Length: 385
Image 1 (cartoon, rainbow, N blue to C red):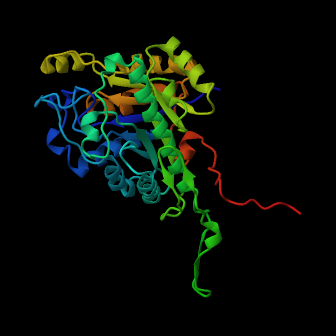
Image 2: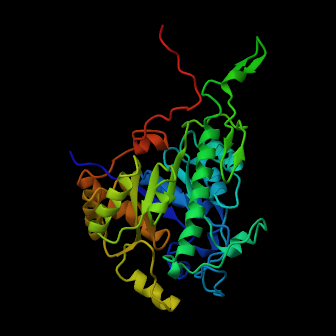
Image 3: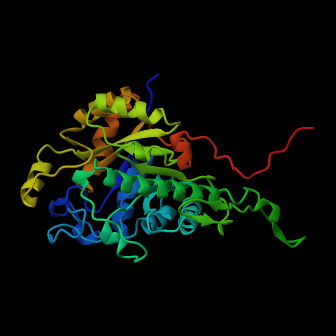
């Protein structure tokens, strides 16, 4: 039997090309309107995609790592990804909603309650794209600590490696605290018995008592355990530093099928986790060239860029699936045009190969992904006599 792919799309403003907003098909006047985001997510849901991710950051968009790039011809500013997901949740029914929430400079207690609330609002469709921030300009927004200037081109230098490793170590602690807080209420902790006056079983709320290098959190959470138990945790990583984050899905950026197989082998050696490959998608052979000319430079990316028709993209996805990739997070170059092409042109080709679902068979994001029910680490199990 042909194994089916998992598919997600990454939504970012007018699209991933910095000049996307200048394409005639886009709606730059609607980027900060709720209807824009509703339309995109509903389009993805029409395609029966597993989930959408929503990009976010702690600083304005920039082509430079160390601050603003001074360009006024690129989209600047964005809405909060988690609040977009909360707005979209009640008017969608099946698709998973995975906002980006940065772990650096944020408190895990707050993140845990926000994502648990999103899981309630979406009735079990919430996820989280955990992201680190090492930019000095973003650290300056908070004033709690200073980050060194960092040249991404010098990432192999020992000082840079140590700095990035510390960011990921903090992220791993952050994710662990959030997961423990989600478990700090047992599923049946709420009694709600008016006759006896007992709303809650106090024995089924648990202190997490987490103490680590980066956080000390007592708990319990103020929000009952989410409907999924554990909303789906995802993260983008370009090296082994991200393999130990404790995520359910890792987004990786292979260059070709052989590289995909190498990355999958490395990730699998660290434990069970689904591996999604990121691919930037321009399903119009001329669109990227036109936007490059408008922008005055050739668009490049950390991820593989596909420029061409849906048949070529389908062949690429299937070959990478055969290399061990579980799914893909497609980054539309232009929105909504490339997302529409994904839904109307790519997906029929994959369905014809038996490689993608024809309809949803689950109502939760964990169900779409085939993840097992989330065990509560604090729940006491009954021992048979």
